[in-house]
Amino acid sequence: MGRFKRMVDHIGSVPTVPWTQSGVSRHVSMETLMSDIDIVGNGPSCDLWQASYRYTVACNIPPKHVRYNCLSIIDNQPVLWMKNNSWAPRVPVYCTQLVKDTARSKNISGDWFPVYEKQTRTNSGQHAAEYFATKNTNCIHLWGMDSLWSEDLTSVQDKIIIRHRRPPLNRWWRPKWNEIFSNTEIEYVIHAPKGAQNPYEQENVRFEYHDAKNMAMDKH
Image (cartoon, rainbow, N blue to C red; front, side, top):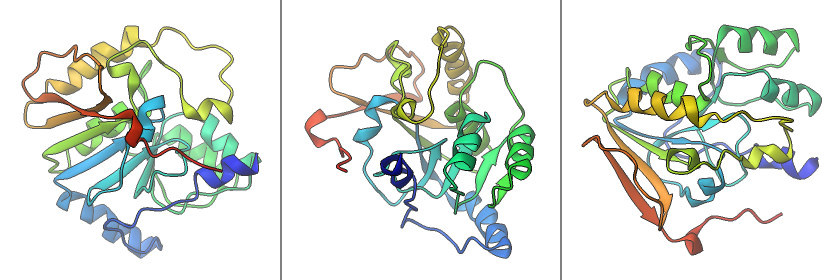
């Protein structure tokens, strides 16, 4: 389990502020200055992500190579993992009220912001995409979200947070993504391995392809 605890303890070097309570206020105001952001899911292709100047939102318990500025969490399983592994986030966490309440009840420190309304059959990346679209963001880069172009719903997080059953979530996720992409004020860039097919017709959605050989594989 120690290997996976190390997965998550990396904070981005792209524009950040100290994570004191007053620092978080500064951080929240800085969101409005982030015209381009990365949202990094935990699908197999998350290894394609490379550090850049962009503000980076990671989801749940991210892999080691992702250097992030905040976390997006919408269910309690990552919070329970934090409790069981004596780990607390050192960046702001954007979440639902239930997730914040659970974190507080488990005495997990950190700055938890319940900015999300709970939605059924959605994921943390979708919540982040909707939220940051309201923060003067012009372009949202989506990484590690293989379900955008395939039926692969697996996650690198599955090794540490066991999912005993996984319903056919793309039945709900794909229509939700189409709803999100209908915001034509935002450009969405989906980062995928070469060979992935683009199933979207919206003009503000494009694919950017990467060689698998350039994947930032974790080595432990």
